[in-house]
Length: 284
Image: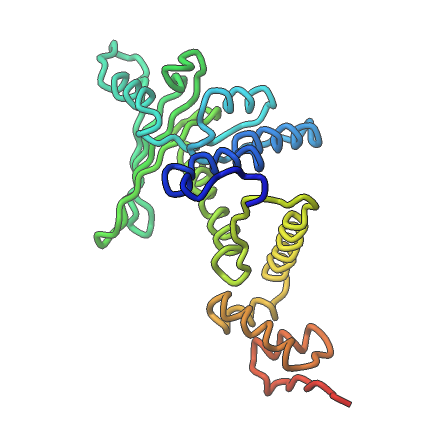
């Protein structure tokens, strides 16, 4: 690790802390990166309505203030362990007596869909984010999901600047949960399903690793476009069942055959090499 002054003995006895500090200085951190990204995004699109969906790392006072300054809506994860004061405030408000006819400070709603899944919501508008920023108000949403046949129950919670009511609670819940789907179907796919896109702790003096990362993301974008728009690509991917199998056959076809065009290539992957038969390499 060039430039990191960490001895072998320190690696064994706490040197990982020093190495981590070095790597953070070299690559910055997720919070600073998101600040740069959101600021640049607003500068490029000053009038575009945006709602930012992020995980629990983003539900802190400075980041929420930044989103408000940039005029961006948000739905941010908020876990009970990280927001004890917020959850305690909501519990206390819900249990507090209120005068007859007054609107409840905390509301609940339950519904069961056609598949038998039970959805339970609890929300409060105008809640303080935490003890450190009691003047920073957010809207709090908590959700429980119970599936039939004894399957695993789930619980989620978020803070948002969008006012919550019975008519949009379900939509806000979907928005909050779709973040994991995007993350899983993008980063997990890149890392574990054939692309081998691993985490990198340095970009090098000439940015070769960054170039490779950009090329990987460009190729992944093309694959996503084909998966959306090309029936033959989807048929080939479905036939191989797993993306890793698909990319193994993809590479082996290039190493074994001379393919006249992409149509022939994807048909061979989707329907077998007999219909049509790829053209073998001509060694003459």
